[in-house]
Length: 282
Ligand code: PAF
Image (cartoon, rainbow, N blue to C red):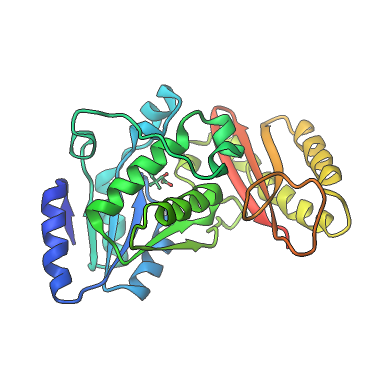
């Protein structure tokens, strides 16, 4: 396994390998790797010769300085974990300077309105930060395929839009949410949950699963009211939003249509840890 910290070095390595027709899958991460990340890496390795994993806590996508400060940074552990998967992995773990070159600012993007829904409403500038870093990483790594988890479904939709708008030659592949045995979606933030919140958190997926059942016979409004009541009765989890939205536009559903696919999205605070999850409804 090779670890690069400088973009010029990884770029030159990848371009020389490409002359030999080596294919590259790419899994961008912010580190603190878990089973969910490893499932993306494994998928990338079944479809490409090499998997590049970037490990970079991107400052421009945090709207909360405290969250950025507390975000776990576990590079040595991450590298050891990746070695257990395969040696056909390249790690790119740059410093902020290597990416932002003295100007740690996000570009401003329009993602045709996708950026204004859900996470975009609650995390100011978040998707400008994500767009900025993913575009730069794509320019540096130039992968054939890139893999993103559906836990961040809105992020995935926005990255597909970014690639379309800027004609970036990469296939963006969404991968099913990887869950702990309890049903809790894997997230780097789970590590920071205090024991009682860790026990409480699987309630999120349990509620989403029942919401999905209810959506077969009830309206989006009725399901939303039911979910809101369930969280109001839960002393440990505080609901930030629950939204049933069109999977393509991400706009909240007003009236159900048989020709559309819907998804329920949730953001919850477990103490000061913000967790998100979602479920396909049809
Ligand atoms: O999903 C993440 O971990 C991040 O948003 C990403 C895509 C690595 C960009 O920093």
